[in-house]
Length: 250
Image 1 (cartoon, one colour):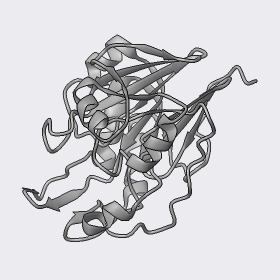
Image 2: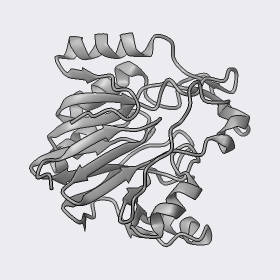
Image 3: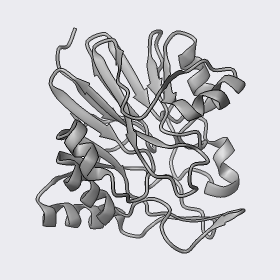
Image 4: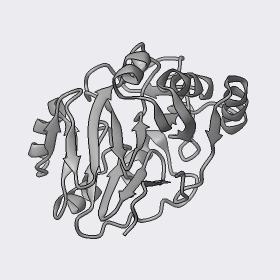
């Protein structure tokens, strides 16, 4: 049994965190067919997610690229599903019994402590997005969902930081959804992701939420993401992690 925190990046915005016998997934994604009408087909295969009995999950918000209903239902059969309190009713309606938490409210999952903190979604509060802080064995990680830039980074750092790793979205997507269309990024750009990690006091910033979907004109991600991300991190003196799906970060 390991006594150190281990972290792997999964597909898209998925992250796996393990400590001892505790296994936690954040925004795991396996079923991509529902995303095709707007986000298009994935540019590479999305591997199945291993969910042995007792696996737990956290959901940042209920958009289908972060909330894979079938996968979450499978995890819920033997583990807990954590969500922001305003999302609990929709999960109940979908047949999933979640453990709801208010902003700043901590909960123990085995050897880990998890806390939802401020995030900002481009569609306002229709999904009540949060970021998740996960702590264990003296290490601390934050998963930032698909947030936009916001003004709470410094408060999160004061309340919960510093962080060993900050997972940040970097595709800076231009989204033209029905009823929601704008020619400005709906998620953080590579440069904004780095700045968020700096404000959070993170030692390492790990890029996520990029490289899998690009479907102009409906869903158009930024060009040269990895190069821009690494350049911005070098300028700010923070370690940039470009990690392939399934590979370790810590």
